[in-house]
Image: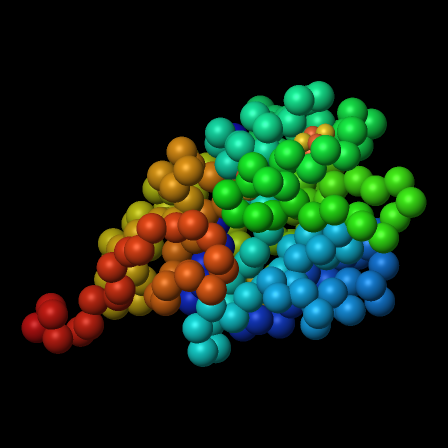
Length: 215
Ligand code: SF4
Ligand code: SF4
Ligand code: SF4
């Protein structure tokens, strides 16, 4: 099952990943730009991924977490959302009846509604499912100039993340976000700062150990 590992320590906040997402999905760039400045977390039906400044000069991705046991899928009565075997949680607008139960159910408050459209649908990141099926990486992963995101098998990314944290105890907090939270997600984070500004319901975790603790 595929996943994305996001390394907060490498991200400069340039938002090339977000722009690649907007282009790849065919969203209106003017509406997306408007939403960037008017919506607190930068997510909308025109902009399904955003970059949030989680601490001074530290940035993290906010988008669908592609949960292993997705509440949005459980909440949908008509099969509008599916957890695929490859990892992405995908949306089928042809089945959607617009009840918005998925929006209420998502613990990460991710799905957004096309309030301005005459026939509105739900929008959220699908991890570029069509690209993945063609053997490509998600557009955001490919666009990043700093290799902030690794895309691959979830188990391999988890092993890599734990090794990274273990080998660099002064660079990372000893935790891999998304490994266990909400029964696990297909987006994982390693970081040197806490992620509370994402407004995700992650439990508090210890801060990075100071150098002196190891002297
Ligand atoms: S983050 Fe929300 S929308 Fe995405 S899979 Fe999980 S419950 Fe569904
Ligand atoms: S809004 Fe659509 S996808 Fe969401 S729960 Fe309702 S029918 Fe399912
Ligand atoms: S493109 Fe890479 S460095 Fe730029 S904001 Fe996105 S993840 Fe961060």
